[in-house]
Image (cartoon, rainbow, N blue to C red; front, side, top):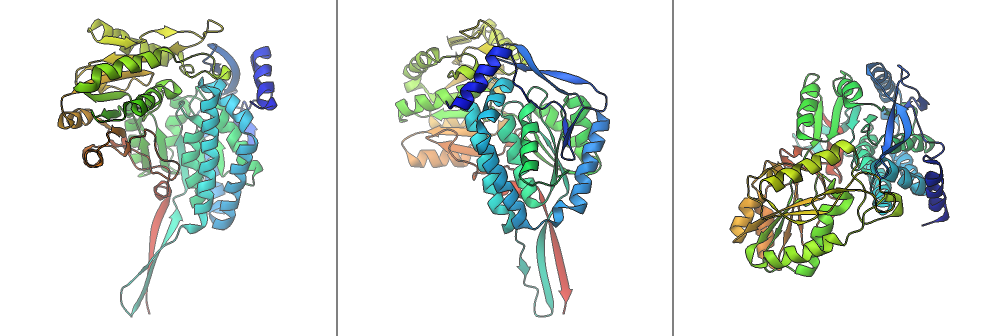
Length: 497
């Protein structure tokens, strides 16, 4: 750690807070309190104590933010040359890297994840801005061959004001993977971060302004989903909504946007299988499974939360995996453990409820299985890395998203049965395939119904790789050049000559 990070950590553990944290909405290039004057607390999951307050917005604040973004779109941002938009996004990437230490510490405090994971989140955010900075001046249309008597061409135009509803598990990088392509395309954005993790969104808005983004192009509203999120996605001037969260909330978002015929990108839940065939490289696969489910304490939409494994290697694999899981350190994120905290008490209770119910049904707990606390202080919201072994295909812990460090193990007697189990839920976000046989791997990749497939390395890819789900995991894609499409509309122009 650098001395700056050490100083921030020292300040926090000495005072229980950090100086200079943002506390108001960011509207029209300035921080301002909620119109009602109300505030909410944000908690450090590693201590279960509040460490900052933030504005509790309502429909009046939504109206101000959307009006600001609408004005900035019509009068300013859409008219800025694409190359200049790219330069602003590039400066933003550089500023994120320059402020990475503070951003990572705040992300750790707000979310509960380990400092190393938070640092990775910040690096990803900088890379996303950098990637879309390069794409801003490459949004090209086409000429259409209609014959000698016509000239016909298409152009790509920004859709207008966009709303971004951000989850609490990856608050920084998830925000950026939506707003960076939107800004590159010439759209303006109104961001609503989760009420559990509001701070880095406000910090990023300030960084964007200081990098040269005109006032009103990026506004950030804090508060609850009911008071802020609902009126934002239903606003008549919002032309596209990007939402990451639960299936039920995604349905509500889509219904609200439909009233204004606004387009939607939905990245919803997952119950992603890791298909382990008998000929896999077991040593490498064990390490992958460990981090596919236990990274960020399992609070990842695309986590490898199901292990579908051939029977001949099942017993040995689970024995070794349970031993590794039991050795993982957990504790306050700023102490940089291998496993950080669960982001909220509500989420911790949900995880514990799933595991306790499984125990009652007789499911074998091969590792973990209980809530716990920070090893150093005896406080905070933590859950042990858990393995539920030999679970039936219709069991709740197979069919429903737990969103915690809980791996459900399903046993298959053949690759064909493994495929059926892999496709046996309503979700289709991601899947992993582990085998030395490339033919088997590619056939499974073809036949598994998921938005992204990882072969012999879970979470393979980067900002260049399109990301999104099938079935109840949503629709639309973020990241990569596909991530720009949601924020562009096609106009065709045809002239008789």
